[in-house]
Image: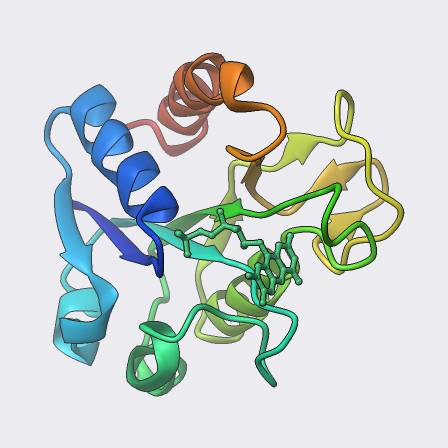
Length: 168
Ligand SMILES: Cc1cc2nc3c(=O)[nH]c(=O)nc-3n(C[C@H](O)[C@H](O)[C@H](O)COP(=O)(O)O)c2cc1C
């Protein structure tokens, strides 16, 4: 079972979370997404996709995703599982908190993947997020600006959940 963590990061926050996820999962391969290809996406059984959110960008994704997004759109992810994580700032951007999770969710789902790793929206203080469905985020939101102390416990609990839901 191959696990790939694909991430884009401007100031290093998503990259730090991706590295910690790789440590916790032990067998996962890290892919800085700016260099990822369609074949890289299709080579994994479980894909973990991460991006910070940028409301000043048209698609709200972090810039490293620009080319990779097209590769992901063209990829065939049938039979693969996808889990999503996003870094955002719920106080600075309360109306678009971790919106990038939604963008990645929709493209992965359209590519045929099964989405796992949804996360309850308790313990966050935001007004609106495109990444919400009912009472759940479509992936794991992290806010290293306002809730740095919650990052590590959230990552640990989410990894346990992803393991359970993926069977890997
Ligand atoms: C110009 C700008 C726009 C941002 N837009 C959003 C946003 O729409 N939603 C959000 O949750 N966070 C937003 N953020 C916060 C970033 O996502 C946050 O700082 C994140 O930690 C950056 O992670 P990175 O270093 O991995 O890129 C924005 C930050 C800046 C500077």
